[in-house]
Figure 1 (cartoon, rainbow, N blue to C red):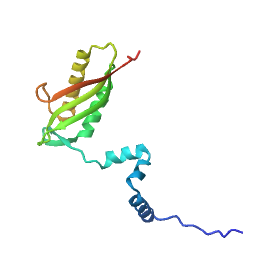
Figure 2: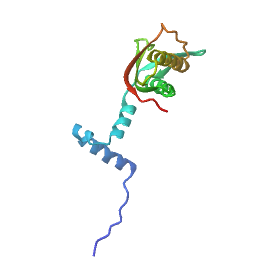
Figure 3: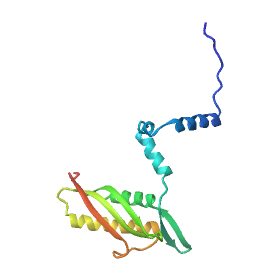
Length: 154
């Protein structure tokens, strides 16, 4: 006959201590085996991010670059002929936005110059809405790199 013992679940502190001990024991090779989404989330949470200075009637505020990148991506995804591949924001030493580089795939047969102008206009609009700073074409460079061509959606 089996000896049955009543088990008491570990406390939150004990679980945390066990988890920390296990993580300390992991080598870099162990992290490679972790699920990719776990690593992606950890990188988003842990990685410090630059901010861009915004302005409104009561003073200044900061917008984290990843927030700005997400907003730009969301708006560019609404342009039918464009698939956003990568958005990079360059911030100067005073935390002012210096430039935005957008890498895209354009639908086959699209007029690239027209698509590029739509992308640049949309990026300036998003940045202005997020930071409260109206941007003219000469203030912040919006560099567009067409990296690929895809089939147009019907």
